[in-house]
Length: 481
Length: 105
Image 1 (tube, chains in turn red, cyan):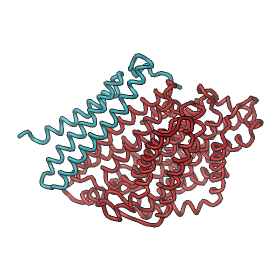
Image 2: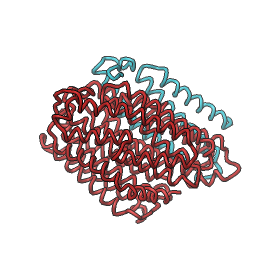
Image 3: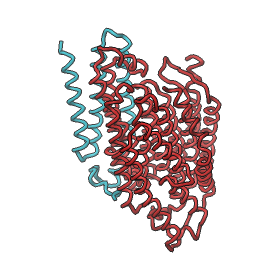
Image 4: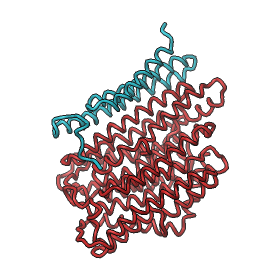
């Protein structure tokens, strides 16, 4: 291993090292003092975040081109690590209230984040596959973490079966790509596509199977059936982490694979991606209207949001606009991550033991009794619906602009119409909070409310100076194309 | 020698059987077996393609090493999956997926 190899994977190795040490520490830690484990986990994430930030602007390629560290992966690594930090903050009080306070929770989360980071850095399909599993297997365990609750077990097994089903598709897809090109490295595949002897049909079928597999992972329609069940059944802190981190990681892999490998097939893939994205937006938003359980509603909302993010990938074959389009997608990913984390945080604040406090009607009266929390939820709902003054609006603006530049007017139109539909169920939460009488009970958890406040501040303040984030995202994209 | 195409056909058949099995069967152990079948169909395809590209030593290594990775990852998945299935069985005395009806809406 050369020095460059080490630099390439330094943040990941530090995170994995911290996780392993924490696992060891946790085994010998006195019972009853488990809460401190959360502190150590946060320290591990913060340390890795510092390292990632210190590597900003650098670009390495290690292990014979199997792993790279460029602007794109650095951007996403920072997002994943922030997700991890917020995940720890959301979980520490919640796990205690739900009587599932075990230190392994944080360790699994750290391994999962390491998988996400590796996924954004992978430039060889072997590494993509390994990273995907490193990300997913801890998540299967986390989804079933509340062993005393049947729903959690059920969520765990459903997530596990559907997740490994997706893995099956991805493995077979990679096998076909390998068959067509005789290599799994991205650079090698790109070189092989240019050769006339390459069997392009085989390659395209393989790419399609990989797309199906990742479609499951990021929950696009028609591969979304597991999402509401898993999001509802899993412990809410896990759901928050899954909805934000795992989805972003899936998109990072999709983006890297499709943008680097298949630009020459853009004409074939573009209609498929466009239809997937349109279906995802329509089905996700319309089904969400009928939901009364807040976790289920946010689950369907996250499906719909995946459709918007996917929309940014549709014009990936058009060299003139793909950098802006994908940068808009990254921007929206950040907006979605922060906002959804905040809204899940509010859900955690109201969730009682035995799964009470999760109906939308349990939010009645929140506006009078806890105006600050209601205000925070209002900001998140506005942002998810794409109303001012929030990051969600700016994100949608960039997205639709990029799509219009790509001359995909019908897709932009569907995006706008479904956004209007989505406003109905997001605003319903606000109406219930402010105009219905009720007596909501919230949990005491300072760390949780601090992180919610942080999410509110980011959502609102960044919406007034989006150019900073957008130019960062654009620069990140430029390193890839 | 058996032509390479036979192996490929077998792997496609295995993969389709696995993919259909997941959708049709209701017993979670059988579903899990079907998933393993899909992974192994991928392995078979990898080995066959490696053999097909035998002139290119790097490709042979690439394909065969991937198989090792898939096998280890599948083992890790088995560890998690069987644990989950045992948990469900302890609570419900059944591993039928149709009885997992707590989450609906």
